[in-house]
Length: 519
Image 1 (spheres, rainbow, N blue to C red):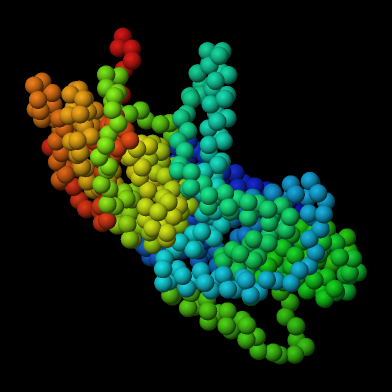
Image 2: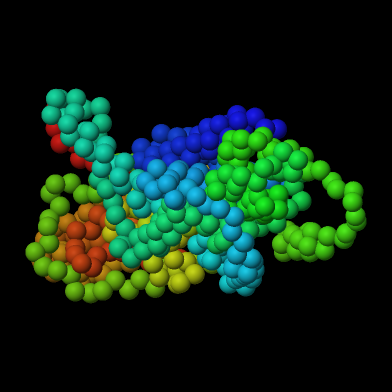
């Protein structure tokens, strides 16, 4: 096939995929239904592989479809379905507009040692240590972290700016959204990969995909035996070199009439560039000149078999009468374990399967999920963790378990989620302003949806909190509502293994915000 429409179709399709993924991660109002998100995520290789490892059903085995697609058509995943790949194409095109020499790629020898060393190291580290290195280099996760840390805040700023202008004209179609940032160090990893991938794509095209990305290297191995591929007709080629100069994968050796199929991402640009119509895309033609045993393919197949086996911020639940502390609290919170999201089963299981793609962080309507620094250890950096100083886990919400693409967060029915204890409440009397300032409070008790925190008589007319850890679900309403700083008088300590909480006698299903104008 020599049709120029191939490239146009590829650009249109990858643009739609990129727009869909951007919409998923910047959807601060949770307008996109979860079922559509899961459909789009089903063909992301690493998340679907981990999800299949967890539940073992063919419905979750989207990575198999990607392997079949690669076997048939080559590395079309990298150009059609990978959001980071589409972003690199866009960036390399921008680089070409800025400086023409950026678009003069030319044939370059493959970085074979680096490519296969990184692939082998990623597989070994994943088997022995866990998925951290895999998620650090996974293109989908890189894209997700970038959108969560930088893309979504920019969209919210634009929303707030437009809302401010509209409010001047008494038009209240858009609401002002509070931006919740993360700890400063968590921005380092997305920022490093932003510069790494951005600079490489700006100047060197798809060099990240063909030198660093372990998924690109793996799919490149499969593409060596693909049925459809880019072909050069030696009888028509005049060796002008235009195809090589325009190939962003630097994989066309026009002098030898060869294309390095393991690096070709099927962008079809060479078909458009070739004025001699010597380049086409179609089924491989078998040469009958001589028979040689392809040991590389045999090694690849054997290795492959081994691999296969082996929304707006919710206000605090304290009304305007909640006192503001006059003194700083002095007793440090004794948190022994971080709080991982509901559906994680245990911190160990969660850390093994989470790719740190940040989709749950972006989807969380309350903004309680933040990227971890060292809460889980080095291997768990950038994975989501609960931060109850920032917000709380909504009692009637299961959004994070619905969107998780790897099954690191198991889907939970709402009633099951309400009875899943992800942590236990602790009360520090010496930090409570009822004791330290002799001031009535009770914000934590008012916020608690299960009444695991309740008030008892203290001194005179004052009441002080008491806790019942058996019915606590660890949602963090109380910790977020507590007005003391810098240390809370009440906090949630995470459970290493999630357990079942005892059902409360009177369930308060929602936290009601006080009405400002009761008329």
